[in-house]
Image (tube, rainbow, N blue to C red; front, side, top):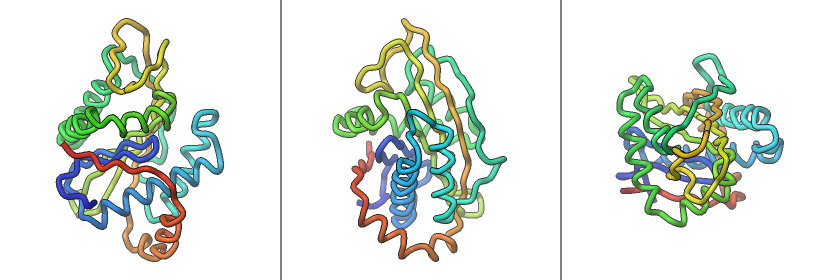
Length: 213
């Protein structure tokens, strides 16, 4: 399945929100790099027990594949109160980012995810009902380079339930603990690793859900 009219991707505990319509090759490369980096980090550390070490390995794996870190590397451990739902928090946060299209893109991604029960079930399982998950907005910059923001998130709440993204949290104290990194793709580096990328992709066993409204 290619990127045409795709609002996002869910793979593992990673929710990718596509701000632009990505080219078919970029769409696949982003999906595969996300999956490979996730598996690489899972082999080094537990995303639940030591999220900082896990995220460092995740970013290192992406860097090896051609994604360079910019905007002062990784920012860690920022807390935010959540008074409605995680989905509304994500939309609000996206609207506050530099690119004003990101809020609408997040709405479209969540709208595509919400009725997709297999995808929601997979996210619940992979994230342990929000204990650790990632949101990754993707876009082209003004020069046409593909860039992503990786938001590594932890939901701290009294209770967790299925479809945690859309669960109302108004009657309990809930917080999001966030770390983030910004990366930009150098396609020349990716192409030098194309053989390895394709080999790793053949070894992967990770579900991918192409999200479309």
